[in-house]
Amino acid sequence: MTDGAKTAHLYLPKLLTAMREGYTMAAFRADAVAALTVAIVALPLSMAIAVASGVSPERGLYAAIIGGALVSALGGSRFQIGGPAGAFIVLVAATAARFGLDGLLLTVLISGLLLVILGLLRLGSLIRYVPHAVTVGFTAGIAVIIFASQIKDLTGLHLNVPEPGPLLAKVAVLAAAAPTLTPFAAGIGVFTVAVIVLLRRFRPAWPGMLIAVVGAAAAAAFLDLPVETVGSRFGALPRGLPAPHLPAMSYDLLLQLLPAIISFTLLGGIESLLSAKVADSMTGRKHRSNMELVAQGIANIGSALCGGISVTGTIARTATNIRAGARSPLAGIMHSAFLLVFLLVAAPLAGFIPLAALAGILTAVCWNMPEKAEFLRLLREWRTASVLLATFVVTLAEDLTSGIIAGCLVAAALGIAARIRTSSTPKPG
Image 1 (cartoon, helix red, strand yellow):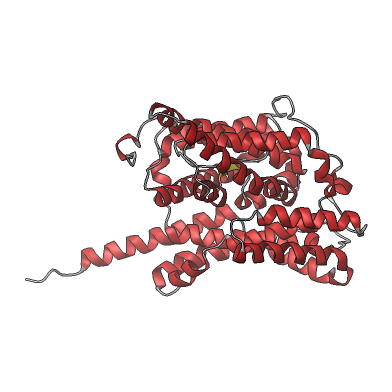
Image 2: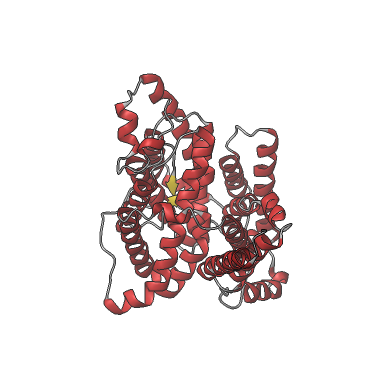
């Protein structure tokens, strides 16, 4: 097995490489098992991410089906799984709240075009130079923001005012609504988190998220618990994919969306290549960064045209794909096919899922999203701590893009200062 280092610069999908190497029935069986495993994880998670992003749950499934298939078919990573990601929740929710669904879909579409352009300009390698402390900092910041956004559904709070976007204002409103907590919703939320955590600890091979959601839905239905469900808030999920269509657009709208488009593009590129890098470290192979950016861009275009939210490489699902024994990108394509079968056959069952259970899934995701040990390690050295904290604090106080920019600026300033000191130090002799 070659590691792919000699062909990392090529615009050649890894699917074609895998087929050229020879694809056996044994490899197909391994890919099918891995695909089913990943689909079981992706099914509840895609819906949970969509709901947390302020859109209906099928939007997350569209992204996982259309975007996931395109990422695997065209991507530069053999094992990458594409789909909706928790890191995008804040951006998607803010864009949808301000510009509506059409504005969100247009943002996803144009950011996809920009990702294709970045890949064609061979800028994929530049994204790798984003400082490690920045990625750790914004990931931790996103986790905190996402958790705060789930408290309402997790505990069944009733708010008298719209839930604010900024973190401090959000916490204040949630705290004021604490007396309206719904015990049954909170119980389902705690049950969901507990099942996921316990199964991950004692039965890691079991599909903890799916088991937790099915158990919560069954309890809510059979006990007739007074909790809000997917069906009560969003109605029945459509059985199938919508016909592709362009979202409404205008020059003025594009100008207003520009900051969001840049944020989607920046985060999509970073998150996808980080995920591909994780896959490399787990398999000893090397991804094609520019091909991966092109594929991610096309996947976002395809997702937007079919009504889906943003798509990126997903670290947890990619790692699950590798651990489940995937051999080629066909595993990612088949994972999307399994999700499509669910949408065609079993979509009505999603209506029974309590929203507190979906919030519980994302609460568990938030706990595992940040690199907690790495965060503490980076705090031990003042330079990396400065970059880390600048990114983390600004992400919480402002937004993700501002956090990334702040962290990169601090890292650049420290690097320049270090060079000045080095050049001004007299050499011995």
